[in-house]
Image (cartoon, rainbow, N blue to C red; front, side, top):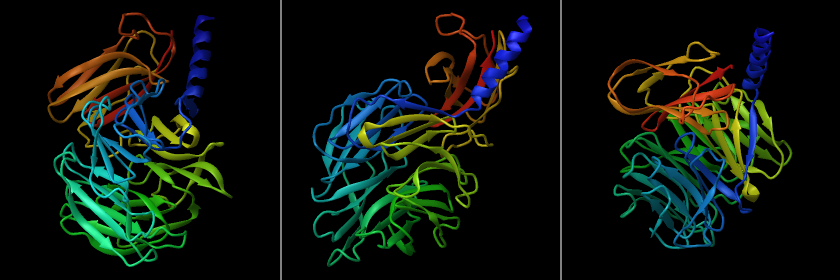
Length: 431
């Protein structure tokens, strides 16, 4: 009878492990949230209107509001390098930075206050770029700026002036793959028929070369490989040859589309369209085909970020924050833009009753951490937190938490972190 009960429990747990989880989180605000960024499965930030910035250190179970030196600003984009160093941009030419996880934000108005800064891309703690333009009024100026000292000083790398609204080139999106290779998108953004121009640099922005027009309105860009560029926003276009040719998806047209990419071919896309409805779409072939992963209701969602396949966050209108754990499997279990410094293997035995072994392989000497979480992202126990040398390692978990108390049966996650790279796998504990 006892063995039968365990088998039934195991079957129940496996079924539930294969189900997606859509968890509405309490933000405490009603404003529109425009962007979200997580550095690992616990630490994240989201920003929006009325100078709103929210922070979580437990995977979103609790969100707290952080204070800014200037209020009543619309914040557009945020990026954290690690748990402490972060940057964001918004209206009135404002750039904000923090060195302590957002406890304190410094304000630096880098250009005139009629400029709206739309996007940013930092390749390390010191070096980054921002883009924008005067999207209100005459609409006749677009700029790309670079800093190498964390935003203390800025160099205008590209400035485009025009005689009127139509045909102007105001920059709305930028992304860098490394310190040399990056892309930017700009246009007049007057209506849905406005062209978007594609620019690329291979020398850190010393030269920005115009490569032609991309169909649709582009508000965001993601480079996942040297030649693979995803351009999205009001439409979706993908290039597999560095922007020479683009594949434009005529079926995916929405308002401020955003995508969370697991690798160069695979990801989840927010598609909110007046006729197509609100859907979370999934592709595994670089956008050639899409399947509906989730249909969601109002209020709408505008931004998405992910840590591997296990953890996805979405934010949008009316202060909405959603934590999503999709039922997606694949060969790449890493956080976006990983460096493949470490391999994390499936634990054995799995499922397990008393103890299980977790194996990992390290290629270079690095500080690492191996942490057990429950399925909602709550930390259970830190198994490893130290500097390890190259080699193959085995760590045992005995099914107990930090205080030595035995945890209950269920699905757990073990996450191996090295720098900004995180790998996550699931295990099942049966008592």
